[in-house]
Length: 129
Image (cartoon, rainbow, N blue to C red; front, side, top):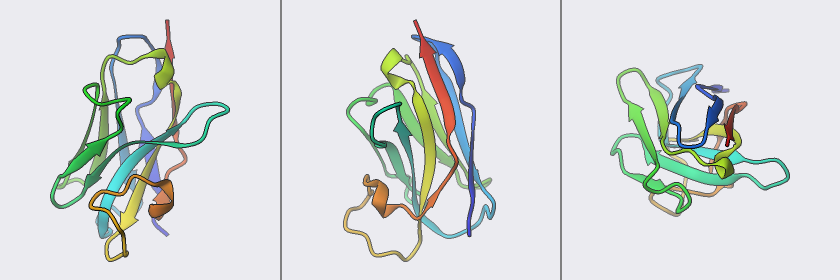
């Protein structure tokens, strides 16, 4: 079972930046796409951004568009989420997730949590005023 590990979370002030990273226990496992989700206290897990691993095609949620950028390092098999101009409402636990290669999916870049096969434990991002 592939395990994903997030890092880079922390406590920052509104307007600051953070970069999250995600690595896998088996870095070269075949993955169709990877993504970031987040869950704030008392709220459901929501999609943030995703990337098709081999093409680099990306998609973001409207709430982070223009502020967050998802990217990957193909050589070292690391997933990133660059978060700029952080807002109070970005406070949440951020999860890295992956879809295995070969899985039947119904959109070029899945944004539903149930489409993802592997998940990390999450990293806390707290934005203060």
